[in-house]
Image 1 (tube, chains in turn cyan, orange):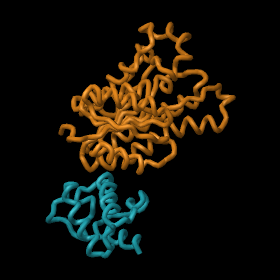
Image 2 (tube, chains in turn cyan, red; image 1 turned 120 degrees about the vertical axis):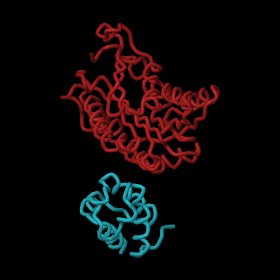
Image 3 (cartoon, rainbow over the protein chains, first blue to last red; image 1 turned 60 degrees about the vertical axis):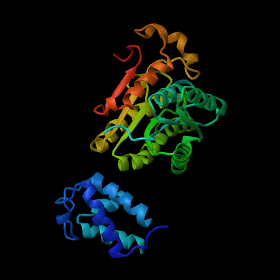
Image 4 (cartoon, each protein chain N blue to C red; image 1 turned 135 degrees about the vertical axis):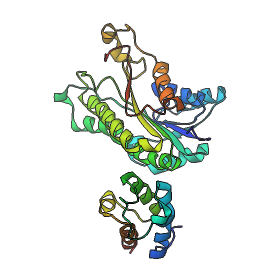
Length: 82
Length: 244
């Protein structure tokens, strides 16, 4: 059963996942850009998979291309679920 | 990093010939092998029996890889063998030979769909468990036909050359995750699929003989092993020197 999509729940999953891609936990915030966190396109593809497994929300390649910051990712998942 | 325990190798088209030999070789190397077949249940069961007889672990997996139901295929493989698919050997292939002027749309589509599109769909799906495990081995069975011409096989050559191109690009995308993607390109190997072609071509092979399925399987076994962790994006020709 997929977890209910709320901004807080998505933010927690994204924040928890990012360190496994090498992001420094102290630098993770909604405003942080993936580029600054050194999170690359393959990392984002994996993050999309984690989000899909957790929330049942599928992000397409086009969507992922538009995401620049952590906040963008959270907002996009919430909007796709709506 | 070494291969995780209970790792499953999925070999498509493994009921006979090269695929069966690959399944046996990987099982001998400790992989738990999903022996996929489309129609030859007897051959697939014989492959599994041979593996089990040698002390290995394997299960038959009936599916037409061209039908696109890859999630179900992976779920069944992982359920039957109790581990994640961390090796994929895209071996299933078909031929529908004719001169280009006589290849109809159906024969073009069938060969491209089974030999290339199905391999892509399986590759894409296999990357899920492999990325999670930070470990994976993908081996695409290409052919000396593709890199080289072979009159009467424009569809087959296009699919096999496509496999090599796909191999190279996917290898770059996932190399930093401990996943290797390689191709093995057999020359003329003595199987049911090639027996009708062999007579005319042996003289053109530098080794002056057809290859055996086990000789292709040995190359796949190496590429799937931990010894080959730094080998990715390459095509290993097993062809008696034909492509040299």
